[in-house]
Image 1 (cartoon, helix red, strand yellow):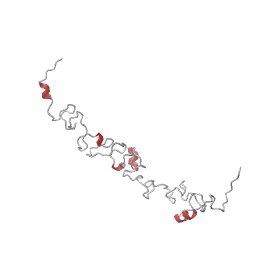
Image 2: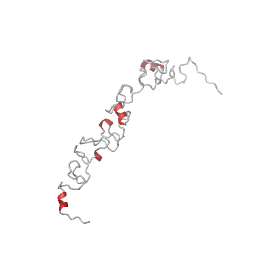
Image 3: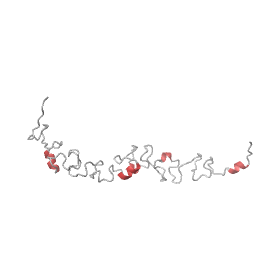
Image 4: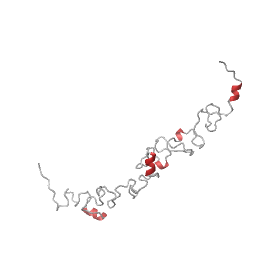
Length: 182
């Protein structure tokens, strides 16, 4: 079995032509220009190697998902979709994905951020939070969303929501002249 010896005086143990005293993957000259310690692989001691640590001088931060310059620990909206990480966590959407349902609309503008088939609530009736315009029979009318009898009159306005009567004539007079046979 061959023995491998490292020459501590040789700051280029991997022979790539760059001096890297702490073997963190960054050259000593790069670390010096960044103002980090070329003798410590993890300058800020946060457990993340300087090469992968976006904030190598801040022990409270190591990544910035949305690349806005604020680390994820301090950033209240890591994916920059307009919905706070706290709200996304409680709503069941992904705080690291600006479009949790993958429908092409950012969660902050999506009326149904967990339903990829819905993204709008045109009439603002709240049908769109989990149920969007596709499920709203009256997407332009904030007072209506369902038409049980299919007469094109919304159930909230329909005098008999279970009876087809598009002219809204009272169906009871029709029954008065009807003889029921048992």
